[in-house]
Length: 257
Image 1 (cartoon, rainbow, N blue to C red):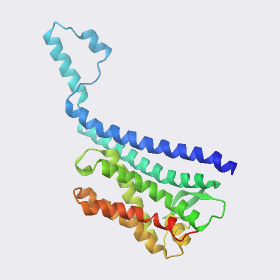
Image 2 (image 1 turned 180 degrees about the vertical axis):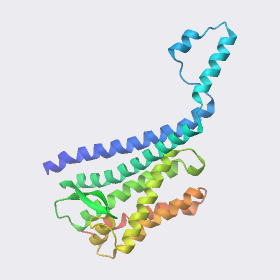
Image 3 (image 1 turned 90 degrees about the vertical axis):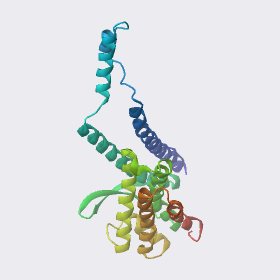
Image 4 (image 1 turned 90 degrees about the horizontal axis):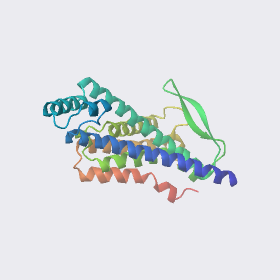
C-alpha cells in the first residue's frame, strides 16, 4: 500500500507534465500564424538600436525593411518547420498514449517494467506488469492508452474544428498519431495479429469476448475523426465520435470484477 502511494504521485506528475506540454505546444503553434499575420517585426537586435536614428527617416525605412525581411521565411524553411512540428505532434500523441498506461498502473500500484516485443518484424516495447490483475484492472490498464489518446485528440478537434484549413502542424501530428495508431490496433484486433501484449488483446481477454469486437470499437473513433477532419461542420460526426470514445469506459462500470 505504501509502494502504491509512492508510485501514484510520480505517475500523475508524469502524465500531468505530458498533457501540459501538449497543451502549451499546441497553443503556441496555433498563435504563430496570428503573429505572422499581424505583420509585427522581429525583436530588435543590439545592432538595430545602434544604427537607429530617430530623426533620420531614410535610416528608419531601411531598418524597417531589414526587420521585415528577417521575419519572412523561404518556402523550404516553412516546409521544414511544418515537418518538424508534425513530427513533434506525433511524438506528443505517443507520449499521451503511453502516459495513460503508466497512470493506470500507478493508480493500481502495479510493478511495471518495459518489455521488448516485435511488431510486424520491427522491435518495439510494451509496458508490462508483474502482478496478476483482476478483469477490471486488466481492462483499465489495457484501455488507458486509448483513453488518453482519445482525450488528447478530442481536445485538439474541439479546440480547432477547422484543423484542415489551418497551418497547425503540431495538432495535425497529434491527430495523425491517433488515426494511425487506432487503425493499426483496429486492424490487428480484427485479424488477431501482432504481439501477445497488444492492447486490444488485453481488453478482449479481460472482457471474455472476441478481439474483433474490440478492434471495431477502436477503429470507429478513427473513422469518425477522419470524417470530422474533412467535414468539421458535421454535428452528427462530432457527437458520434465522442460517444464512440466514451463507449470504451462502459465495461469498467458494468460486469467486470
